[in-house]
Image 1 (tube, helix red, strand yellow):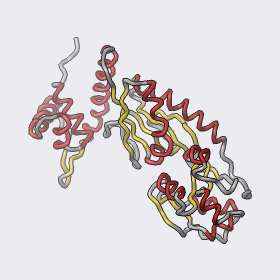
Image 2 (tube, one colour):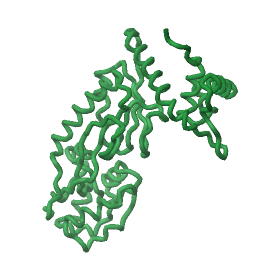
Image 3 (tube, helix red, strand yellow):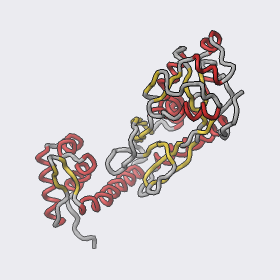
Image 4 (cartoon, helix red, strand yellow):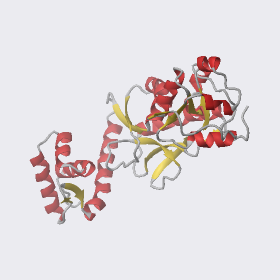
Length: 307
């Protein structure tokens, strides 16, 4: 016989408060009062025989035992949700929450997302952009896409890497030709704030020390830098995976053949403790589309000279 378990509402209150580290936000999520959350937590702590939370300088944190208990509670709720989804074949829609880097979302995923939605009409995508790392226990997300290579605590699928090279609008190139890399000294360089090493790395490979790599305008994302380049604001450093359509349409042109490999690659991540049918469907589609991108951009290799 299964031994007595803590009240379900108390466990729900604990999971929400632990994920958000706030009784107020947990109350808003569960549509109850903050006093109700406090009561549920007190009941659960009395049932368990130990404290789950403590406050330091008005900041709510989990105790050591609370940290140890949270993964089991979260996994139990995930299993309940998956089991419910499995038996409710008539259920109209499921929501899939994906955390994505802004550049990947704007320059690669969103232009292709209609295909997935068309093939999977019962899955409603919820796309959240974020620069930070991924904590699946704290954040209400099903999967994520991040740059990097080392993900020991997560399932990780390699999507693709990329190569860097300058791009500009065809109108800019027509009025101010770029025959050799050193000609970039006469142009405005467009930078991405989070990637200050892009231009120095490419210019070093191009053997163009006379070009000042730190001058020019800066933008928050590659997407903004590409948009500025397309409107003739200067020459931007592009990533091959993000500009295939722009190059094919002629919106942007690449004046040099030199490609320098980017140091990081994109990965699809999801927790090892849980895999749902909706995540599996999206993963299969994503890996297939990423395979097409790998085939189209080839394997980036740093060359020793441009053009």
